[in-house]
Length: 151
Image 1 (cartoon, one colour):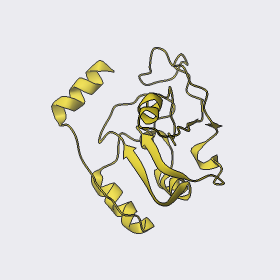
Image 2: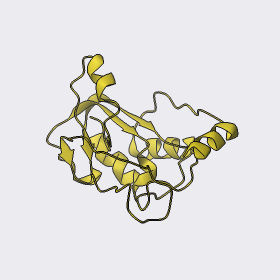
Image 3: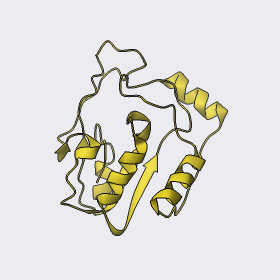
């Protein structure tokens, strides 16, 4: 399950692995809206299996793997989001997160934090009784500058 899949850039990869691909997005970001913050010049949503807020995804279906990339900085309550994703994950399943350690405003008005630290994840994993299989920090200040310069 690709949560907040946007344009669905991981669909081909997942299907090449032989996985059945499901996608979700709330489909409210408008790249042309007059809002503060940097935006994508164009944005086209795919046909998603679930169109709703993350917290409203039905829990009747469970998934082996949930992919949540570059999302948590765009939700007002990332802890509630993690709790919801655990309810959507089969026992023994995995949730894969990626997000910036720091970023400038983007995809406004749906930008709520500049990133989350590895210590944030360790704290909330312990609080929620989750195990962290791997926690990797990529990049440095030069990578951050390159990312934001590109944006």
